Length: 157
View 1 (spheres, rainbow, N blue to C red):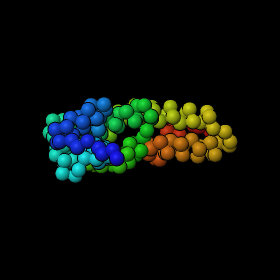
View 2 (cartoon, helix red, strand yellow):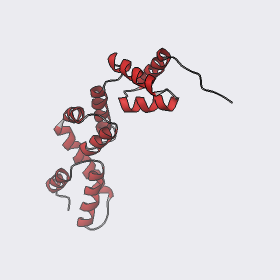
View 3 (cartoon, rainbow, N blue to C red):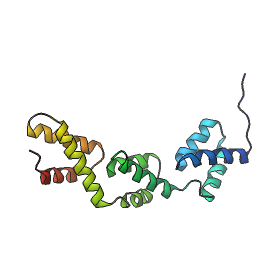
View 4 (tube, rainbow, N blue to C red):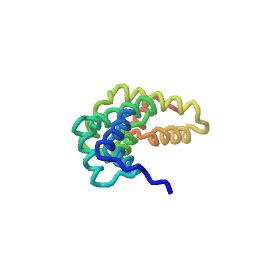
């Protein structure tokens, strides 16, 4: 029978630091990984405390990086970003700070680009196309009132 190696606290900290150095991590994600590796609960608390103390984990930095990345790369809207950060157990204030860093003009231009591209790829009568286009953007996490306001300004009919 193959037993996992028993690590001391310093070894767990070093392993977790390597994990955190790959990309930004939040506390919940790191805690989940430590459990997966077989670290016991008392050591998990100490490892997390050390990672936070020495800035290997910083929830604000994580939230900001996550929001920027999901917006710029995946073109997610604020609502979807907020839900994902909430699921990662990031405090509401840090989520609000991260979302505030998204430039409003860039946000609206991205939404315009998404709506325009989806409109061109959608067929059917104008009302059905508007519904499909709006539903797509709302599904990506954009706010419904903003979606319909921009659809109106684009005269998609």
